Length: 289
Ligand SMILES: Nc1ncnc2c1ncn2[C@@H]1O[C@H](COP(=O)(O)OP(=O)(O)OP(=O)(O)O)[C@@H](O)[C@H]1O
Ligand SMILES: [Mg+2]
Image (tube, rainbow, N blue to C red; front, side, top):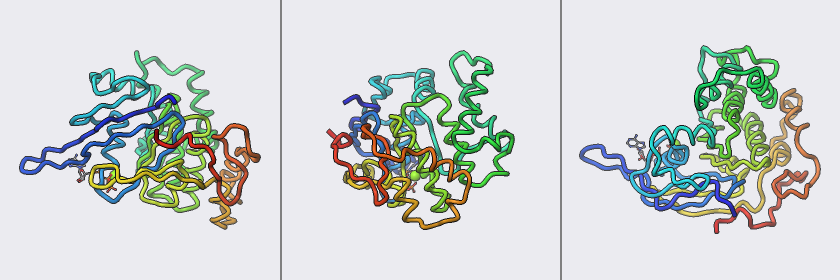
């Protein structure tokens, strides 16, 4: 199976003078294309450190990082930022939107960092608008972040992360600031992106959220402690059924999100089945080899 990303004996040490914090102490992991992983573990176990290394935001102290077949550890800063822009989309707990910018301007942002910095074309602008519509913000494109709810802000962040059509989406506590209903909306969006074949690697503290993934990797003290394969995954339908919150179903955006979901089981193993009680996974494709 083709690997989206692979880390081999990854170490990250922070030298704080009198002490060296060993945030990662030798982590080896394979992420096949189309994987959906929840990274779990207690505070300080190294989850964000790992995610930041996977995102090329930081460099390891030692070990290898292979992204889409290329050894990232050997790249210079320019090469690294190019690869990052082309292959990776980030979503953070605090949304990281620019407050003076409108929804549309925030979504446009990654396009300004393309190689050669080309000006935005009408096609680009149309793509931004399509992306805003896709996340249910078609009516709010000229709003600014302070005029939006937390869930809406996170949807802007997801649209922004999608602009360069990334193969991998990294999310650090993407639902950490959201109520459970809004979390379902955000996880439904992530689930749809995974069903399109994108690899999703998310850090979460919440066991409910981790059940949306294909597998869970539990970190402890800077190493991988265990892997859990989610035999029965949470689906948008099962999450909503469990929520029993009719107000959510009255919400226009939620309705649109639900309406966009496939209603029947498909030959494609990645596509949502209509099961209400959760989805039974029968293939072993997501298991670590
Ligand atoms: N820039 C830094 N300088 C020094 N130490 C750091 C730095 N970043 C992280 N650490 C340390 O590395 C360890 C792992 O931190 P990390 O942020 O990866 O944990 P985490 O699992 O994401 O925790 P949380 O669940 O609280 O977000 C911690 O002991 C932390 O204090
Ligand atoms: Mg963290």
